[in-house]
Image 1 (cartoon, rainbow over the protein chains, first blue to last red):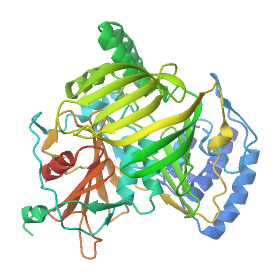
Image 2 (cartoon, rainbow over the protein chains, first blue to last red; image 1 turned 180 degrees about the vertical axis):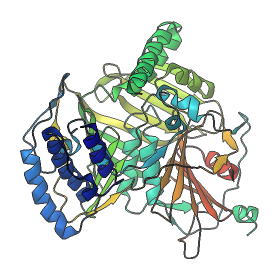
Image 3 (cartoon, rainbow over the protein chains, first blue to last red; image 1 turned 60 degrees about the vertical axis):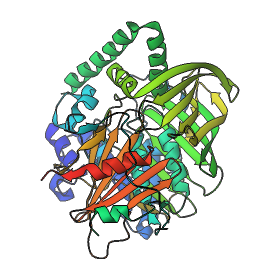
Image 4 (cartoon, rainbow over the protein chains, first blue to last red; image 1 turned 90 degrees about the vertical axis):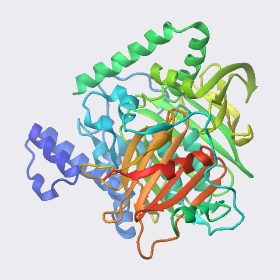
Length: 211
Length: 321
């Protein structure tokens, strides 16, 4: 049974091909595998790994699959402040719902996040202390000097859409300000071209680079 | 390992309460308010509308925030400008742009959100910021506690927080530059704390015909960072390092944070036909960016910090191998 789980999990992680999963032995694992297949399909659809035409087909399949999906009932269920309503098409909740002990999160393409903490088992509570061990020489407090003077030369706008989006979303994890970074992300994203105007007054930066 | 993690989290929780309960009354009250602001995300159910002002731009957004046994759910929908909806479930974020027929999906790393609420980190914040409680004010018809957070050096911005007295939710936030001028302001105009919120707010609409982008499509077995910042403003620590982009076109994303401010460093190889890269300083509202090229690599640093901070970090980046 554990071997089945490992095979399914490895397939979800793209470590092995579908046909390498082979047979799964128990009814429970068969059900889990079937459900995981549907979730994989949903994930692929969302991430654009399918064509537009097939996505429409998949949408219909997903709608059907989701409607057949049994409600996940955790062993212990604390308060449920969110009102459950009629299951909609493409319900994110269903999409992300845990499946029989399998980490559904594995169906989502995982970003490779490597913190030093990841290398130290059981050290989750010491994230800051651990990652802070990268050797850096701190700048002295109250010793601020402007690096470059303010410019006058207009530089071409640089499209930094992806950088700004990624910065905003990652920043949300490292601050106590709750939804503020997400709100920033929305606001940056609302500007169809997140273009930053270069404000460097002179070409000091280029001079420094020997250009 | 799971048991060890639970023990670790349990110990951290115990330490949090133990240390907070032995703090001086004044420090404890401020610490508890700051801790409450962080914890509010994980225990509150509310709907509301807020405005966000940056430079000369203002936008209004409707928010639904809920918590259930599966974690935190949040929906933010822009009410002016380009239509956009963000649905967040814990650290998974789906952004939908109906006009552009675009949907982006991102899943952030599984790093536990312990950074801000560990007491030692609150104490570290006090090394770089002066935190004062200014009293109560009314925002969106609710009583709030006001915190003034002033940086002790010129490498970070100041903050002013208005926190709901009942829920600790941030109802207003000013971001202040080195001159004390407001460079970004968020304020709720309506806020309804509710026992339950409708799950329909978190539904994803039909995305047929949409182009989708995954912001985290990369994976790997090992990261060798290969770069480091040699002169980092005090208090900023490396919190994440991420490989992004497609195979053969990867870039490195380093994230530094002092607990309030975050700075991103993006490093990628430059080559023939590369699009125009940022060289020098750039700004958009509270966001400053600084770019430079070094040893065939483009280094772009950005964050809601003063220009001098991103410039200093960019200039200090060096290869370690």
